[in-house]
Image (cartoon, rainbow, N blue to C red):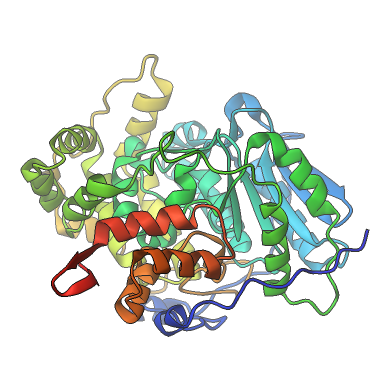
Length: 493
């Protein structure tokens, strides 16, 4: 069946255009030291399967124009390993060149997970073999990041079904795709500080670009977002019930794009198509927005600082959300001090990194963690011990981790080779962010410029976002929290 492309979404509002000018394909590299070491290292060496790779740990399928990637290790919650990456990357590159392949879909086998993360237990055991094992683990991360970057810069629509647990490596396979579909079973988290690591797989790019300090909060605490909360936070672009995913897949496979339709037009058609299958969002009475209201204010208050010590002090001084602050302090106190400090520094620096620089820098950071004792200890304590135990971190306290220790994770030695990527695509803002709910900075820009009042502002955003579900709720929450009406009129505070 030949389907004509529906009309595109309306152009972004004028205030967004002024706030966020279009990004060129090759974004400027922001760090001079990094620029000197590498301009944009790419390689045509596409990984191949190796003897001993697991059979059938990834399943591939073709259905008309749809190409699907199904992670197939359900007993291990589809945790990602080198064997899987070596299968996926060649297929992605093959489909990118094929005129018959129109859309790529990523999903996980079984009812529990898209992907619970990388197979870190295997990496920890590998690291115990010494330098050769640490290097092999670092090489795995390089392979994984090349896959994530390929998805982030893919020239065709990519859709990820975040149906179930989506953590760590699963986030890398999802978050950089134009379409991330949350369901009632979605459980999102970046739990790396729990195991003496840092939020990688592009977390340096994704998390700092979330509203306010929510990215910093999620990065340091590993807080989970369930179901529709992934949509409200900006992690997911759509929320669908898991029961409709099979029908969505069938419908997407039937889409036929006209030859002259460019990538933005194809993405708009996919976006419209998925909206057809929405069964609505849970009511706010049933599932209120989690990172909202006074809790959100407290997150921004406490996590805005540039040192972990200041964040601890702010949490200790917090009075309006005292129970939450105490629980958060207990959580952070159990984390690796090194991981906390490196992660906070990563969140601040990552705001300026391009998507390519992100993965190349993260590769270097990951390599340093593979040689740090906290990673092995964290994985063994939290994932391999029965029952899990509190890890014994080295060093054990925040004051024992100096600023110099942290900066070593970000140093770029002269002449050191950079991770070779498989694509030259680059940007400093997601080019497809319009498919998610409006960002708080966009709402602020509109309020400051237009001053239409809450009701008209909500209607304007709903119209501009083509009546997308969740827009009204998100904009209303932001306006309730960030605007007041007094003798000076209605205004942003």
